[in-house]
Length: 391
Image 1 (cartoon, helix red, strand yellow):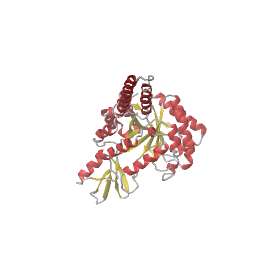
Image 2 (cartoon, one colour; image 1 turned 90 degrees about the horizontal axis):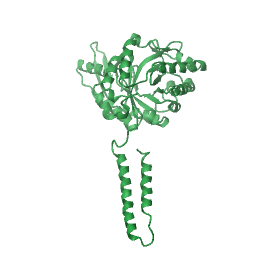
Image 3 (tube, helix red, strand yellow; image 1 turned 180 degrees about the vertical axis):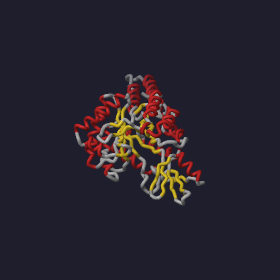
Image 4 (cartoon, helix red, strand yellow; image 1 turned 90 degrees about the vertical axis):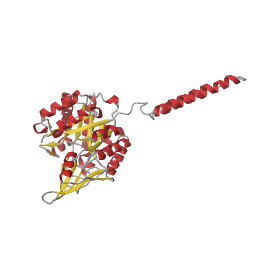
């Protein structure tokens, strides 16, 4: 809207000046009529500007609302997305890994390939963009060496870029999402070079590149994995930068909110200082942790709800972090603390994304989310109708 306002303002001013020119000496009546015409044109110009400010008077900017579906939740999660098709633009099945020698591992999902293929067919038929995630998972675990071998060998990097482009082309994906985690500070330049080369190759093929980055509020962040990721350089190359704004507290930390809202806002503020806002996609977690004895296990909203009911406790809502939590004692006498996500906490994060005017959100759909989330999402972050047909 702002880009249109100067042009409309100039048009009104130019029209007024032309209508106000004098017709010649003694032409009083024509001058008065010209003055009336000038006023009418100015008022018309003001009305046009006002119309551009009315809700719905101009197309809203593009927005990405992405469902990130881990392979273990592909059937249930895919069904949820299809039930709320109008609220999503893309789906990123988390399903590709790397072999020990750095090849793309397509034997995803621990034998769930058939179920995944069936869901992808349904999602594609619904018009959703399919942008699968390729992560440095080897034999079910995060692995550093396969990625390091690729990043620091120019020949292997070139081969890896070609292999990714071929994967996208072969399966008619809209693009790919790269989630290479736990890199080291010394990988920063090489990782940037890889992302830049991959973006160039995908763009030449008419495809998009998304890159998942660890959330941070400064360039250095808190450890080497933060230093390895150059927000500004990756933001220039990629089409989407997906901020993993979760696991502020994690399985081996002390109990606490997974994505406290003040931290999420700080992450967005720093990201926007480095990356064009339209490329920033906020990761919103739809899971939590149940901590006991110094370790937490992941828990869905439904799992947390059942735990609270089984132990006759009422969850509380922390208004500072904007997250629910509760504690209980199990049958063995062990104390547990549970922090999780529900409709209210997700709505708060959707609101932060909307208020920051970024490109959108992606939802890490661990499984069995609060059903109220699906009314909060379109209420806060509606997908423009022009984007709903997919491609």
